[in-house]
Length: 70
Image 1 (tube, one colour):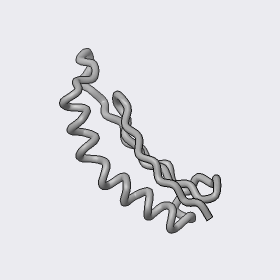
Image 2 (cartoon, rainbow, N blue to C red):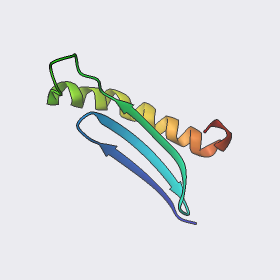
Image 3 (spheres, one colour):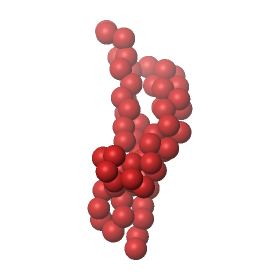
């Protein structure tokens, strides 16, 4: 059995995925939405990602442990 956890951050998204033997068990994401007309500011985006990552890891672990929650 192979279990993999992946953490991803991009310009406006942060996410956590968990796979077991090729099956996606969790794919949890949060999107930073900047104020209209401002675009993505690195400091605010990084702050958003820091605030969300622990909750996303917890959510992914919960969802992958209880597949009926998907």
